[in-house]
Length: 522
Image (cartoon, rainbow, N blue to C red; front, side):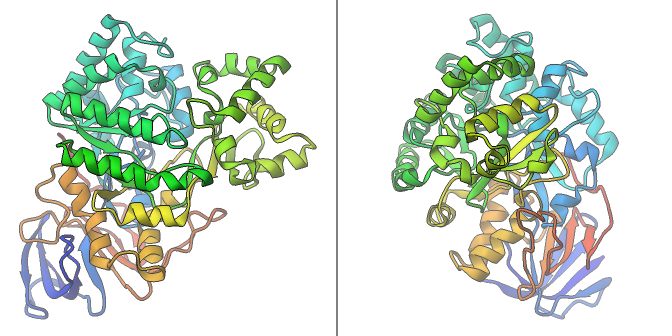
């Protein structure tokens, strides 16, 4: 038995904080008593400390990270005790073991893993159970692997009716085996090539299981309203529960669209569409540098793409398409080369941390030519960060009642966006302590019970009797995120303890490297 004595409890319900002794036995909270009234078992003095539920990351990408580093320090170290992986249509099943195309598709987001690929969700779970996990983890079935598997590796095109039928069968199997829903990345190949018929067929399967559809929309820039309308219409027709991933509007000129975007979502709710969205608390994002290219080039394999990028005539065509950005999000055009920064570039690490304009200046080139050249030279992962939105937009989306917390954390190498290490603590410090957008209890609810309810977890996300003992203890005065672009994993301040299913995973600056996390099945 363990007692958190005299804690200030922020219970995850958005109710006012209260003082209490919280008693843990085994994996659960067994009592919530008046402060300093329990003297049974080991007691932790929580005077002046906040005790809250473990944070729920509804938008993660730890499919391979959990196998490489089962203790999940990068999530535990920011108080995250539960994650939903398999987002943005990027996953590792169903696929042939050692599939080279899958390795190419996933390396920039999920990182490397020996002989990546599992024939089914159940076979992936076998490996995960063998390794264990420091966090509770739920999984979405990724759309990209459904397409590639059903279309025999030739997924960068429209699917036939027979291929759609096979996708639906693979999806049904994954949902039967416990996937909590389907994810798609309609911005990325091969999901970008999915048409209305395919998406509606897949979502009808998801809806029949009453599971989630999490989607990175086709456009988050100038055409965002059309993209939102597309997924809302699909949800309306299929009856699926819709989770819009990392909601934002890209480009300075497009920030004016945020109110209209939220109004579309609100109207759909009034009409009965079950739609919510998640957000990471930064004005800049992170993804593959290759994703800056126009859609027709994203469908090419890496060797074929490099051949195209080596052609002067093709370069002129690509540049014109990127400058125009018609019908797709051209980040280069929307954000500009000054706001696109190299995060990871394995073949040219000397450019890491520099904007693409700075890279171009060092190479005495036009930014487009420098961009094309570094992609041609790249033999490994290429990641970037890109400033996509304003602080005013972040605050407006954050304060919306339909928003849930997510990190969109990528673990593809030694370097990463700060959100991969400190998103949860950054959210609390920036938007509660520095610029109070919401109260502490409101923010904690968005980080805990909101995600748990969305996943249908009846015994997580609250500090309540009978609930699982996923808990975070922190000092509200000392709480501070010390990370930045150059030091994303810088030591943090104020986090005192993280508990997963009644087992301490972190306490007073030290990790226990426990693997007490559960696999959460739909």
